[in-house]
Length: 156
Ligand SMILES: [Zn+2]
Image: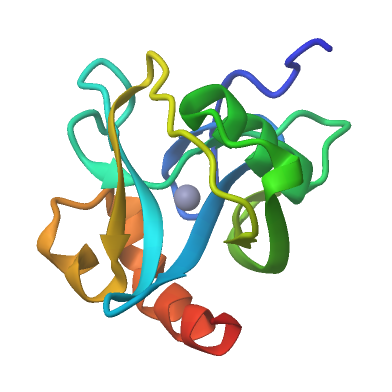
């Protein structure tokens, strides 16, 4: 399938974003004994946009994709996540205006899988929710993390 979402656009807030039809990311969570809730985080390779920061797997949405389809496809490409191993629990849309938005798709891990970092990922790690703020975060993820954390507490 052709990726017609690839390209830079300007949103209503004046940012430049990758993704002509918006973008989506997968916030994958699981509970661990004694560690509370863990989320899957990606250390972005230095050559990517906002390289070197930590965020969640995700990327440009294609015109024919729902946010969940895009998030799961990107998480598959970047982290080896298989859609049959996760259950979508919700979505959080961050609308930047002028037709651009970033949708975070929340999903629970229902079957363990082996993390397979692909070329856009320097490292993949399950991070306890309480330790996320201690990482150098991708600026977009950092802005939405407080709200996402609240959603996670309700989804867990
Ligand atoms: Zn924006």
